[in-house]
Image (cartoon, rainbow, N blue to C red):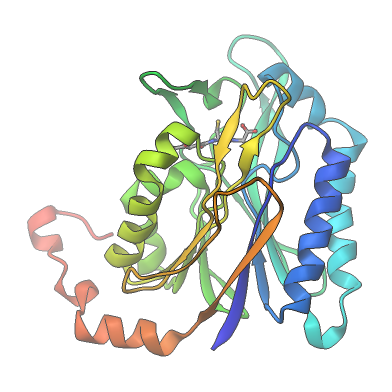
Length: 290
Ligand SMILES: O=C(O)CNC(=O)[C@H](CS)NC(=O)CCC(=O)C(=O)O
């Protein structure tokens, strides 16, 4: 059994203070004995507009954000080391559709216990939606979609499949990661309140049950700007391969928080043996292999 941690907080457009919060969460996870810490999507910043986002990604603070995390990891006592998964923005090599500014990439970085960036995954499914009585978001106006699945990576808690937020609504992504060997699926998120209220927990449990994997969903929480124009659902959650919720962050406030759970692959093994879904799939009927 290995302890894993999930960090939840409220990112703002102040990259420097977001980094301070994140570094503190890294120290707290380490002190609790966790071997991995999963942080939300867009932990570096939530901008007030897409124009601001295109500015912030170019700022020196954006580069320092990752360096400060790497430094925080390197300063941990050797026997208390932590691997960190963190969602950030990066500059893409392609330009926006409606003007010639370079687009963003919405990425998840996996930072190993030596503070090295071991893997990077670029969000494949972009959040372009009109939620009735809720937000209208057009991520693809400024963000370049990723085109590749990253094979699950070896970590202290087993083989982790990387995905981001809205990706969770595309079950074929989780299934592909499971087929490639994932034991744990990570979906760092910044869910809207409206959609989170309706779907968050169901999606987390469904992907865990479908794929017989641990599902880890760190979420940003609270009001990201003074007017509360943009608000995130929080409710960060860890679900086991049977669909049981092992830990969930409370929704009482937007304070930085850590939740933890033990990852126990004897559970994964038992669930998969007792109900061997992957041997029972019917590519002969559906015409494709997941
Ligand atoms: O904007 C940024 O800087 C960071 N990116 C996000 O917060 C993204 C795109 S707007 N949010 C989601 O994918 C929410 C998905 C969601 O809420 C759902 O699937 O219901």
